[in-house]
Amino acid sequence: MHAEKGDNKDIEVKDVEVKDIEVPVGSCQTGEGHLCGWQPSPRLKFGNHHPGQEREGMTKMKRRRILVVGGVAAGPSAAAKARRCDEEAEIRLFEKGPHISYAGCGLPYYVSGAVRDRQKLLVMTPEAFRARHNVEVLTRHEVTQIDPEKKRVRVRNLKEGEERWYEYDALVLATGARPVVPPIPGVEAANVFTLRTIPDADAIIQSAARAEARSAVVVGGGLIGLEMAEALLARGLQVTIIEKMDQVLAPLDQEMALPVQKHLEEKGVRVLTGEGVEGFEVSSGAVTGVRTQGGAVLPADLVLLSVGVRPDVDLAQAAGVKLGPTGAIATGDRMQTNLEDIYAAGDCAESRNRVTGEAVWAPLGSVANRHGRTAGANAAGAEARFGGVLGSGVVKVCDLTAAWTGLSEREARARGLRVEVSHVHPLNRAHCYPEAKPLAIKLVVNAPDGRLLGAQAIGREGTDKRIDVLATAIYNGMTAHDLFDVDLAYAPPFAPAKDPVAVAGIVAGNTVDGEVRNITPGDLKRRLDAAADLVLVDVRTQEEYRAGHLPGALNIPLEELRQRCGELWPDRETVVYCRQGLRGYLAARILMQKGFSRVFNLGGGTLTWPYGLVR
Image (cartoon, rainbow, N blue to C red; front, side, top):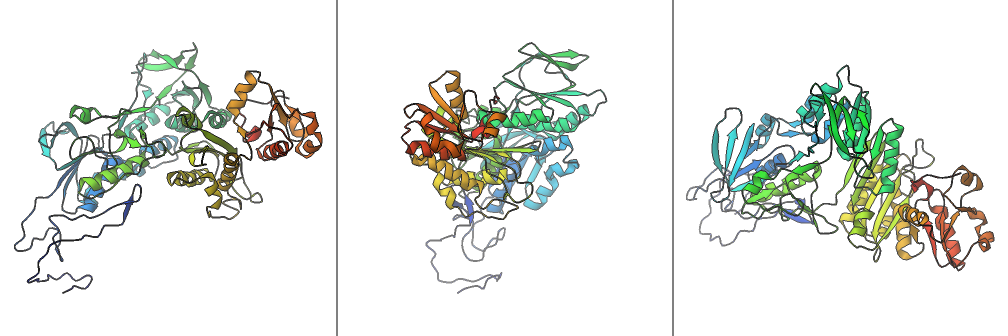
C-alpha cells in the first residue's frame, strides 16, 4: 500500500505488525554539523496521522507544556523553534515588560535619528507573534519563582496583581542581562541613564532635546559607549568618553584600538582613557558635572552609564540552577542546565569558546538567537546542539568600522599560546576604482601549525565582510595558508584581485614558515623604551623618512639596501620597517640571505605604529 504525495485520505492497514519506525531527520543545521529534526514520538505513530486528529484505537497523549521566561531575542526564538518542532505543544511566553521582541542593538541608532520610526524597533508585537506561532504571549507577567520539584513556575500578573502557578514539561530561561550601575555618589540623578530598553532610549532623547542640553559624558568605551557617543554627537552635544582601561574597545589589541580613538577625536569627541569617575556634581536633582578620579570636573547635561551588563540570574539561582565561572548560567551544548528539563538561552547563559573550549559569556543578540533556537528545539523533544562562539563583534564608529573575532593577541598570550602575529593594510577595492581605502587587518595564528586563532579589522566599506570570512575560517579550523586558496568573489567595486583576506593569509603564512620574523608595535615600543641594543632601519624613501620616522631610525631606502648593507652589523638585532610592511618584508629577506641572523620586520609598518613619529 502507498499514498501519493499530498493524499490526505485515511488508509486502512490490516494484518500488519509494526515493530520499528524510522523517522527521517530534518535538515536544520546547528552547531558542529549536528542536525535537529523530528525524532520518534509516542504521538506520531505511522501513516497519515495528522496533528490533533486521533485515530480509532489510539490513545490520546498529553500535549507537551513548554514555558519560556523572557522576550527580546532568545525567548521568542526559543518559542518559535519549539512550535516548529511540535505543532501540538502548549507553549507560553512570559515577559514582564510590554514588548516581547525589539531591536535592542538598534537603540543607539534610534537615539541618533538614523532610525526615525520608533515602530521599526519592534520586531514583532505580542499579537503578531501569537497569531503566527500559536504561542500564548503574556506580557507584563513576571515569573517570581521556579519549583523544579513539581515542575511549575509562579507568575505575577503585573497589571492585575494576581499570582498563579503554571506547570511545565520543559522550561526555557531567557531572563537576559541588566545594566551595571556603579555605586557612584549622585548616580540616582534624573539625567543619568543606562540604555537597555526602548523606554530608556525615549528618556535619553527627551533629555538630549532639552534647550539647555549642551554636553554629554559617556562613562565606558565599549560597544554601546562608542555607539552612543556618535549618537549624542549627531544630536549636537559635546561628548566626552571616560574609560578606565588604557584603550577603548577592550576586544581589540591596543594598536588596533588607538586608530578608533584617534578617529573619534578627529570627529570632536574627547576621549579620556585610564580614567575613572569619582562622583557626580548634582544640583536640583540633576547632574551638572562629572568628577574624575584625576580631579577634573567635566560639564555634563546628560550622563550615559555604559560600563557593562551582568546576567540576570537571580530567579534561576534561587531555584538551584548552577552558575558557571562567568557568573552566567552554566549550560551544555544542548543549552540544558543542571536541572532536568530546564534550559537557558541568551544573555543569562554561558557559551563555549570554540578556540579554547572555555566557558565564556557573550551577551549579543546574534548569540541569543542561536541559543534560543537550540534550547527551543530541545525543549520540544527534538535534538539540537549549540556549536559555540568566537566572540565575533563589529561596531560602527562614525566613518570607521571596527570588527573582531576569535582571540586577541593579548588573550592568546595570556593563555600561554605560542602565536605569530601579522598586520596588513590592503585596499578594500581595486586600486583603480574610486574610493578605494586601506583596511587594517591583524591575524593571530598558532605558531606551530598556522591555525587561525583570531582576527581584527579596522576600515571602511568591506571591513565587516572580511571579518565574517575570517570568523568562518576560524570556526572551521583553517590555517593562514588556507586563506589564499579560498575562492572569494572579485570585481573592482568590491575587492582587489588579491583580496585583503588572501593578503593577510599570505603574510601570516610567511611568518609561520619562517620566511620573516615580525615584531609587533607594542613589543618594539617596549624594547625602545628599555634602550635595547637594536638597529632600527627605515627602508622608505628619503622624502617619507623626513616626513616622519621612528625615533633613532637609520634611513636606507629599499632600492639601496643591497649596496649599503655593509653599513649595518650582521650580528646585531635589526628591525626594518616601511609604511605598510611589504618593503620591510623584502628588506628582511635581503638581509637574512646576506647573513644577518636576527632580523625583524615591523608588522604593518608605520600605518600600524600608534605611538607617533619624529622629524
